[in-house]
Image (cartoon, rainbow, N blue to C red; front, side):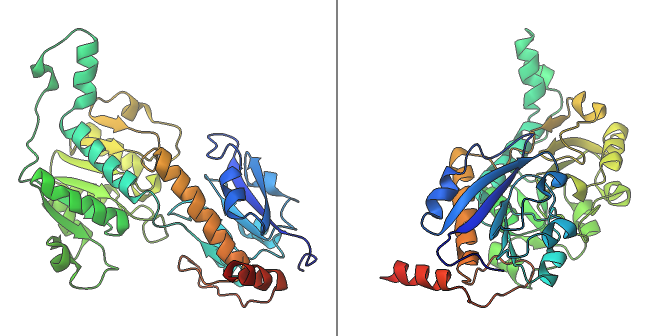
Length: 347
């Protein structure tokens, strides 16, 4: 099952041909130098991985290429899979668990970027920046062209999902004089007191009370379609919805219908269901700001993500504990190469 002791581990970086994130695996090679050979594998779909995984010791997964049960079963000697992202909905973590393969995400990269981007979307939508910018470029230098604009101070911002990013968004709100409420059934009591914000016990209560709602949850069976037609109907007339999490968390057709009917006043969307396809109703509406799933990005943030993903892969190769395991698999240290490498690091 294991490669010969004098052979380095083999790590593959799985990326998509379309919209690739990694040009060459230089960052990963630097982190894993002396421990593993690193290969970048770009495919159009999961089918492109067939027959290429039997000798892989670890995989770093980018983009939306799925790693389903059949693919994972090919990874007979794999010590771990790292999803280079916060969300890991493209990986069958149950299948990996059944095979004893730990799966990790990178939950702490890009927190600042996504929080800042959320506020950028919020401000652009509220201040109608895209519409007034277009008017200026067309020769209409007229502040009245912006239309009706609401004041942020005194508004209540509702945060769905108060994890790392949701908390970072909440901490920025006082600078704008906004009140903050959140809904997150997984957090213990007292978080609201620690942050000085309001807790809502139900999503419906939050949606009814907050004029601006921003979504910050992973895509899971629990959150898929979390905000649908019924939830949108509970929002205040003219409410603003911001989504920088996953497109499938919101029922897209229900969202479009609510926008057309005027139930929603505006949208700030970094993610869509079916991206990169953008429905005509969103492309042609100046109350919508779209940003092409770019909230995570800064030069520093992308490098941080690559370094952290490679560091987690290193931990998995060395059978060391990693706090980011999401499928509850712990492997015993059995490989002499891993032990020797640890001793070398400590010497």
